[in-house]
Image (cartoon, rainbow, N blue to C red):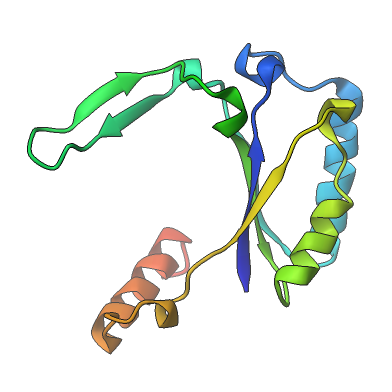
Length: 141
């Protein structure tokens, strides 16, 4: 099973202040542990929302672009990992071991990545197409 682990922003990251050298070192060690365990598929930090945009669909009008920054810092995604774990519990155990950025209160969200079988209207043809597209985007085709 694949899981997306969502790290929320904080006031410092939204202000463009990167993590300390000590935190970067701790996170690199943690990432290295996950690589050695064979569970880390991807992981990245994101720039502040002031550099971002949202495309808003109303359903009746042309999509509207809203430039950042965005309010509600605690709800914004600041980074992510994609982990391959046996189950949700294994993913939770790994994330409980991660370094706490800044030693502050916060939360990490864990969501399972949907598989073709999770969609009731997924046809075998669409599933095959999705598989080919995934392989192409990964540079495997």
